[in-house]
Image (tube, rainbow, N blue to C red; front, side, top):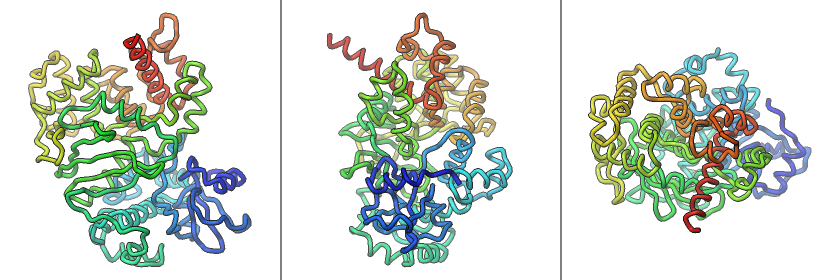
Length: 492
């Protein structure tokens, strides 16, 4: 099991420090309950406390979740580097429902290792088996839906990955000591009913969180008709499993939380939707550790201090992000948005009228663009052919764009496609894979912001080595600095 400094954990718990939320859990021997570091209950005697790296490890040791601090609401453990990056990929696959339809062996094969070695990695970094982690996450999501929504219990059961209502009832009663109905009655407030207002869920994160910066980034790159940023929130149309709908994300009135509203006809897709949104808004990052490392660089120190909690803006769909990156080659961000909007208008399906005037289209599918005359939107023929060939390869199954792919494998795979070079591949890995160390060294703005004399991608890559494993966040700070300088020049 990963090492935990008990003295540091105890201090963080006594201080109720939200920056440690989800990084460890506290098991209380006398009550048999495990809590988050921010739990408001009076701390027990130190000899009655046990610390666990994950909720699954605490559950495996026989502790049950606290009904007051609700461990199911805590941010997930940060994706550490080294061998733990494999664990992070496995966790993303589990979040996407991989083990609901496949076996542990298939998961191991997907990650390119034996199931025995994968189990060893889970024990080392998470303190629990793969099955225990998956079961705990399933239970936590069910408890979240029970407390925060008015979904019928049968829909909660299937949305959280249980194969039957009977298994759902038995699992909840075994872990929480109460039936699902009793748990809902015991919730502090009555959950809203699902209807025209959409389904609302709270998504926790570790502070600080620079919401204005991530919203500005997404606003500048929003695809007209598919995405909209206004009134301090982000909205977009979505399509999953043959259904379409839309989502809205905004800061919650409570601290350290984003409010997600989902309009979608199939509750079974909720687990995947929440996982995608958490990734898109980088809610499981460890901003304190990232800032500590980047602040050591004189080039980044000022920006890290000015914009605490900078997050890596992800994407809803990896294929969409790659197409968007190709459209953005050698043009401005604003021009790329215009082209992306034309693409959606010309080849995307109608979103069936979601209740927002600026959302009208779904982003085109690979099948739609495989045979489309993409050059008709006003881009060079070679670039249009690159999009068409990429789409045809994805549609025919010859190219699998999986957000859980290995970073190096993904970059090399993309660079093998016509019209995709190092910059496009790194940018797609940065936002599509949400890889914290992806770095588009050939980006002109990054080169100009590097303070190097006669900078080149090679010399910038050498400079960026000091920022590993957080080079993607360093790139965001350099872009932010460049934008601030440009705005200052305009005002002057």
